[in-house]
Length: 273
Image 1 (cartoon, one colour):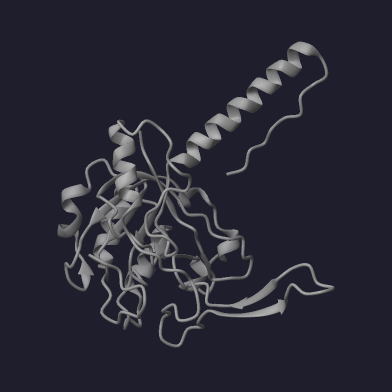
Image 2 (image 1 turned 30 degrees about the vertical axis):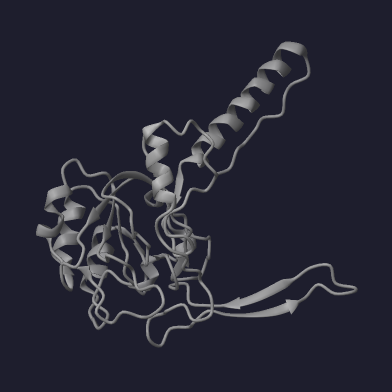
């Protein structure tokens, strides 16, 4: 989030008004971040800022309970990647020492490691890079739907209980507990017909807690081809362990990598009022 704070004009009334606007922006901003809940593979589900409100509030009680759930799954050497993809590697280009005041690292990794957004270029040779895509699909109302242990493909019947008045973003949880320490060759994926039906209902972004919206062994990437044809965006490798079904605000912005086919994201869910 970026706050753009206008410089106060000279003079009593204008200066006081600008000062009030500044304080209001800070208050609203802190309240906004106060409700953010992570769903990346760094902390499965934790509040970004510590809670200090009245503990009798049922909303705060719910949020505190969510904080204690989940597990730590950092992107680091050994993090699972698609077989043949580039694993995470890090070297130190500089280290704090006499004559050097900083540590500076160099990292090498696939942009598909951990929670990430695929660019159209990933599945379309003429597609846009991740740095060129519109950010609108990656932020806004979303729905988390459970389809846990339903088999290799997410069929429409697995989502039908929760598709009334869908928001433009849908995240599907398929794991009871995501296997964050190893590659899962039997990962669950979207059936392409399911993606078609979601698109027909106005969905602009789909997400999943597995490494791909297509089966691991697919050579045709049918669901990726549907999102290409329908102009949808996609998030993969989300950690949705312990996230209840329901509506949230999603914030999962990719980096502006101007030639890349994907980008890591630090995806968060914000509880709605």
